[in-house]
Amino acid sequence: MKTIVSIILTAILICSAVFSAAESLTDINIKALDNDTLSSLADEIKAEMASRGLLNEIYPGLYLAGRDIEVGSFVYTNTEMGKDIEKFYIWIYPDMSAWDKKNAEGSNFSSAQQNAICYSTIYSAGDRITINLEKGNVLYIPYGVGTLERIQQAWAP
Image 1 (spheres, rainbow, N blue to C red):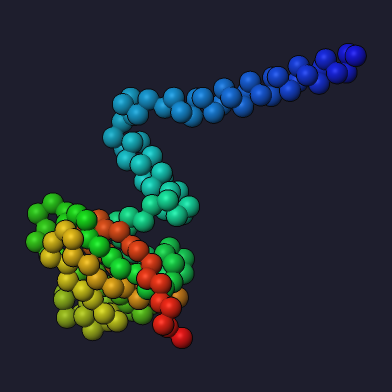
Image 2 (image 1 turned 90 degrees about the horizontal axis):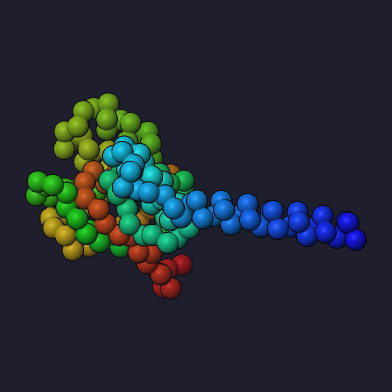
């Protein structure tokens, strides 16, 4: 009888600890966080949501296909231009060495153009382009926020 009571009490303690921990996670006072902590938390949440397939937004940055972003064909839809940006280019480089070569040669347009597989110009929110990424390609998005939607290519070999 003592064994059954101790098992029940242990189970009650474990359950209360689990519920207490879960409750503390939902009780984060985000208004009390400083700006750096809040930004870090937002980035972590967005990254986790994206890794679970819950978020298809993509932000400015450098993405390596097959590591940071899936390989395949996508439609990029620009949703936000960025402050004071009239237009920007989305670049695809064959690999990191081409990206590094472009950076070594400087940030001029002709150097970027020579080393890239392709690039597309984004003029406004709502602009859409098709992106094809193979393993090892580098996708560079310098500004704006957009969404990526996978293209189902039933016709492709």
